[in-house]
Structures are given as structure tokens and as C-alpha cells.
Image (tube, rainbow, N blue to C red; front, side, top):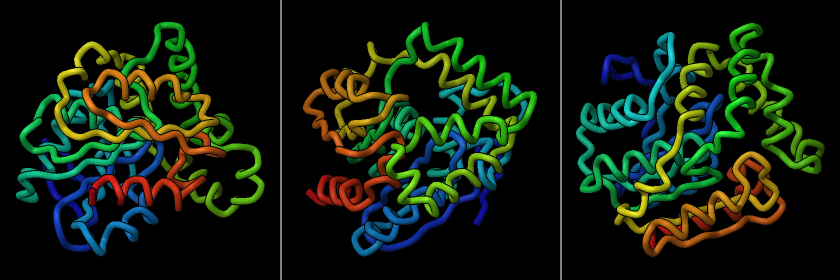
Length: 259
């Protein structure tokens, strides 16, 4: 389904019944990244999944995006669907959107899950993002597939979970270059560690023990800065911990949201 909000046509899916929980995916993925978690949560929750600006079936404007825009897209979607309050689960870029949402609209957030994410991109990582943006501009997202998969999955899972890895590779390849460049520009500028100490929502922070892109140390910063936040580190998982260790990931999220 699609709905017009904040100047975009936003693709979304709703399943289940109960209190609302909104799921926000990683850079170069789409709402299908959450297939397994959505099935797990649907018996207890109304699950809203959506494609971020520039991804999947959502409009992909040219130019750099900002987290103010990405957060406004989310708020516009919730407004259009008349959702007053929601839990929020975000992974990687989705976790960054979740932190901004918690700061912008605290009265609309119940519980927050931030997975495989960070509150700050250090300056020394800037050239890496510049290089990825240049590749996407020259080759489209097909040019970033192999490098992304190498960061996102452990070698063992790339061998044993080939079908799941292939599905994610297709999502990466199909991401519009404008969407990648726009969102990567927002990520490159991320620096909100000094602000997230005001987040009051109960928060679960999840890290993959073997994640080189957003290593556990970045999750430790988030968990130690947001008052009362709990940190869980999933063993034998890299960046897409919800794909590599779905049973553990889904159990952690479900128990936290129900608790």
C-alpha cells in the first residue's frame, strides 16, 4: 500500500492487531527486511513497516537528505494513518531515525529499540562515506553490493545463509542511487550523542558482536547515554542481526515490548 505524506508517496504494510509498533529498516534495504520480525510480533501488535525515503516503493528525490526530513516522513506517515502512539524498532539507519523521533515527538513514543546503530559518525569515517557515495553516483547501488555484504554478514553466514544473503543483495542492488546518496549524506553528518540523554522512553539497544560497521562500542555509548537503557549483544552476528540471528533478535524485541 502507498499513502502520500510529507510530499512523498510512502509504501507501507500493516499486519496484526494490538498496540502499534513501527519498524524502520537499514540503508539499502526495504520493509521486507522485517518479514520475520513482523510475523513474530503480529499476534500481539499492530505492525507498521514502511520504506524510507529513497528506498523500495517510496519516492526517491534527488539531493542530500537530512534526519529532520527522514523524521518528518515518519511523523507524516503516522499522522496520515492516524497513529497517535507507537513503539519503534529501528536497525542501523532505522535506529538513527528512531533516536531523532524520540527527541522530536517524545509523547508519541512508547518503547524504543535501537539495533546495530550509532548516535555519531566519527570524522575519520567521513571519507569512507564519500567513497561509497561516489561509487553509487558512478555505478548505481550495484557498485556497493559486495562491500556492503562483507560488512553486514559474518563469513560463516554468507556461506550457510546464502538464500537470505541473496535476498538482501537484491534489495541493495535495487535501491535507487538517489535514495542511497540522499540517506548516506544524512548518515555521514550524524552527531546526536550530546542530545540523546534526554530520551525518556524505555530503550533496548541491540548490537551484533561481530559488527564492524557499528561495533558494540557504539551501542555501548547509546546505552550508557539514554537513561535506563539496556544493552544486549548478540553473538555470531554482524550488522543485520535480525537476519543473521532472527530467533535471538525477535525474542529480545518481543520480550522487551511486551514486558
